[in-house]
Length: 345
Image (tube, rainbow, N blue to C red; front, side, top):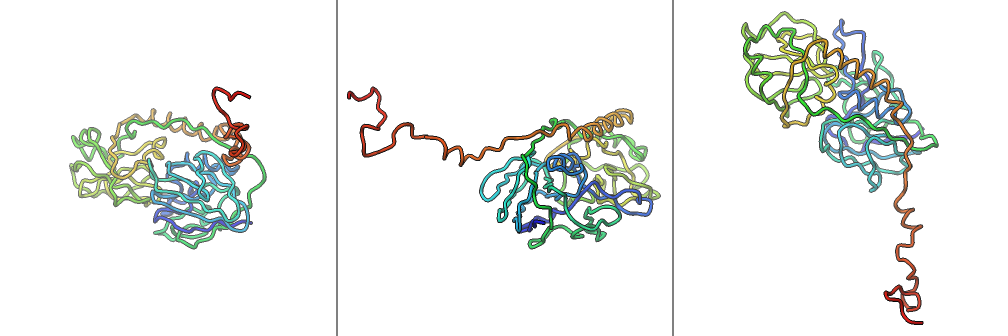
């Protein structure tokens, strides 16, 4: 057994897995990774089940130290500079860290959440079938909260073997697709404003909901309805007219009208939009949303087939074995110097 010690962590770094299911009718939130594709890809790289528990790293810098043995990891999701004891490592490839190594992760460059998958997964006691952290509810394991400096994760020692990489399809760069409703009849002409405007993610957003900044969406009949069920991606419009997109730590019901719902296939892409970046929504039919959900499911099932071995070449070994000085081997012996044209004998 090895240990991964948290030496610094941002406020949105926690353990997440595929989430907890089967009890939303009792008010139990699902939680789980914001970007399920990135979570599954990282787990496949280190030989875990796709939705095993991993470390979800928020937009801020985070660092770890390895103790008591080697640890194999993989980084996926939002790109950021990553170094192991001063040596850069790549995303979408596994990497084995030695005892005493430090893993330094800078702030996210183009996205929000990165995933640190660990060979053997995160160890903890499942709560309602999941290790996923929901801080407001005090759920999650091994810590029912975001990480703090000094937290220690017990992890499996890395097994011998080659490293692996994965090639993921490029993400769509168009509008975030939504299915209108279920209460779109509460908004009338405001639907055109909703679909025709640019939006940004507010800095007040979190894993419970992404607050949107943009035009005011007015209700036809007031902002209160009889509370009903919500899903990941439900877009509520409260009394101030500023929409809120519900995320994995959402409540399971709510009393604001829902103008639209982000389709399943776009939830991860939406979660990765950095705060302040503009985007738009596009309405699609239920049939289109279902087709995209099936395509996403096929991609997730096929991820293990996208994993391949990679050849890791240490640049220091290359330099040590290469004679980069050519045939000049003695600065004090002119007979060994390289000159052009050659010196006469």
